[in-house]
Length: 86
Image (cartoon, rainbow, N blue to C red; front, side):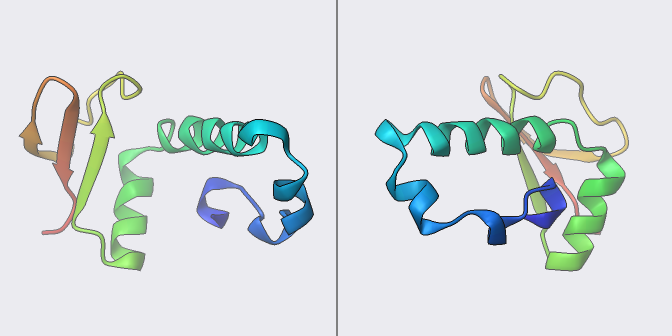
């Protein structure tokens, strides 16, 4: 989670248990999504190398600008899949 600027160690069980109707999760999800979809191709390539990730799946609803320097492996109406490994 540090790659997304979130210090997971600061989230306590109490934060989650005392949260009415999952609002905390929704805020966290929105924060992660915002950071994820603002990342650059070079940041994704770094994560791919670090964690052995081969593909990147992007939801077109949030992914507004295509990465011209990444190879598109698959695409449909809703998703775009980039190949990250060589």
